[in-house]
Image (cartoon, rainbow, N blue to C red; front, side, top):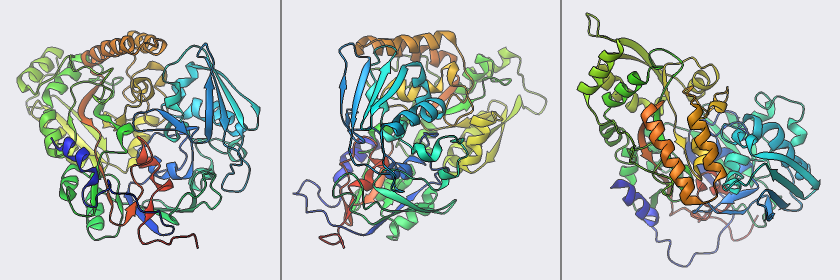
Length: 524
């Protein structure tokens, strides 16, 4: 399988098992990525935004490759005997990029006023956290309503980036102009942002982690995969953030190049086709099931993803192995079964062979998948109008305006089902916020099972509840799971070193430790 090859190829080209040379200083790393949109990590879980914001901001912790918490803004923490109180000692002498001192008041404000209200995933913690207090400048205390097993896995930059209270207090975090010129505590400071083109970051000379970062600049260039592949081939970029499956194969085992999934463990995902469950005919489960039978996800993943993702066998990614099951209702490609179900609903073909016309909103990164979906649904009389949009436009149409028939999202699920997966399905997360419950699905039984799972501390028992949830969701099919996997990123190990040291979401934090092989032995 290609997935195995990608994992094993982490050291392709220059051997990284040899004794590491001493890191050097200076240099600019150019990254081929997507357009991040607003640079406020407290209001988005976008995988396009966090590779940029993860260099600008910090969370209380960072997750290692196995999802265990390690220090970031919090240098240590203690948990009370009853498991309900978490006390964090914050790193001293941390400053915001504008020179203002960072304190526990920033943490309390960020959670109370932004993350628990607006973050697509973290807002679900509002049902868990009883109160947050800041008894002193460098101490912050979270008191939970009940014991909650995955709490620490929520607190990284991806889900818990800490924002400056002095710039957001009394404003609307969704429209604050600071979102386009962010001020963080991280290793890099914001310099400029040209939407649709690039974001430029420069080294933070007063970063609280001594000796870091080593690079002088990071430049994120907005490029679709094909253009990024050409730029990487030409040596114009050092990191290729989001390669398509075919482009990943193109660079596999290339000398001086690493193609790997390492550092992306926290981004394991299921890519679903999202159906608007609150709109006819998608409000009929039989129509949704028929569409699932009509789609040949084996062909879609093999063709559009070149095997980087496998066909999804469950609504949950297989990379959360303790909670995963594939023993759920499956929808193998079966046009006859799809046609029979559609006939049963009364959505019959007209004289022109059409049952109904619908539309799919998507961006250029999903173009091949969209064409395949259109063709396959067309075989059962469903005419799909393809509506290509930039990412920000389709996100608004789907999640804010709720004005769509079908859409898609790369939903990341780790580090725990309650962190990345629950948000897609619970009734309370059908809100006007990106990457939440876009389908409008609401089922009291499902909500109750999610509540039961998070209150259970025994992992095996929790896993059994999540398996029951997968069976229920596979039966109701509010979204149609298409692909399951992680997907690689690509970088030049001949020119840049220090990758592989920043945990399971390294793609969001690599800038802190990466260095240029042609740099200087001391900071100039």
